Length: 302
Image (cartoon, rainbow, N blue to C red; front, side, top):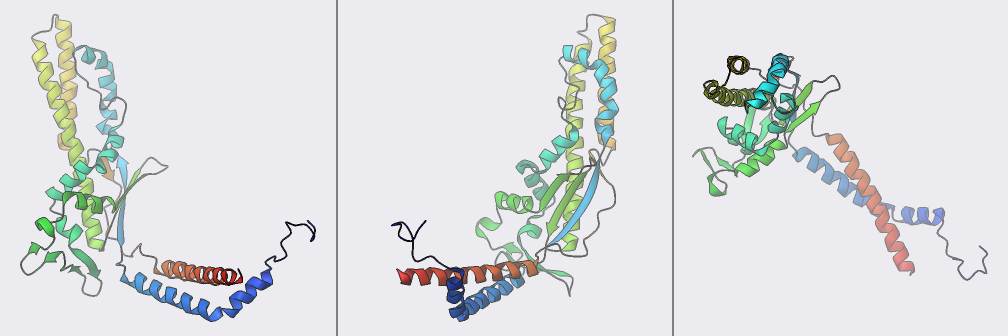
């Protein structure tokens, strides 16, 4: 494009011009950056430390696979009898358990049963020196032992959202399940995770027992209606497998998940990364201050 072209812009912005504008406003850049840097430090220091307890869980295959062979042989007869003896139509107990673990109904019942509202809502931070939890007086009145919030206590929904934000469930490449819970103190993180794993194992065991009991009751009622001795024998076989399933669920404290190692309290915090916060916010201050200078410069030129 030539200079005599009517579309030729004679005021091409050069890098030197940009540098000159920034250099002339270096004091403003420094001042704005300093404000951002100071704000980032204050913000980073105001965030309470977070501790994460993590455990690897082995799927207890006996909860499904141990009976799958026998139940598979009887599946046709069970279907004729109107009974579903399979666990979940091809979906493993582990996958069902993982979905239940993050469901609102399970988490709300878990919080209520273990009386965790105080630990979830009233704790402000953990004092490392005294190894004690500091209470948020704006939420809970320690002297009178009562909630200060509206309606007497935090809502089930708010407690559910709080706890949901603390948990993390992942499947590893080796087929294990990784479960983590973060909290303001190492002891709370460990306690929450211990209770959480015990709760899902108990829930899935109770679920299996309830399903087996319904099937057994139904099958026992069908024995007298059976037309042949062969059919009666088949029904007895199905009842036997259901009783095995029920006994297994009642006897196994780790019905679905078995921790590889005992859950330990974390020794180091995992968040926040205060250095990263300060660097990021400070760089934002530099970029915004430079952008401000350039916009003001070209606005004045117009």
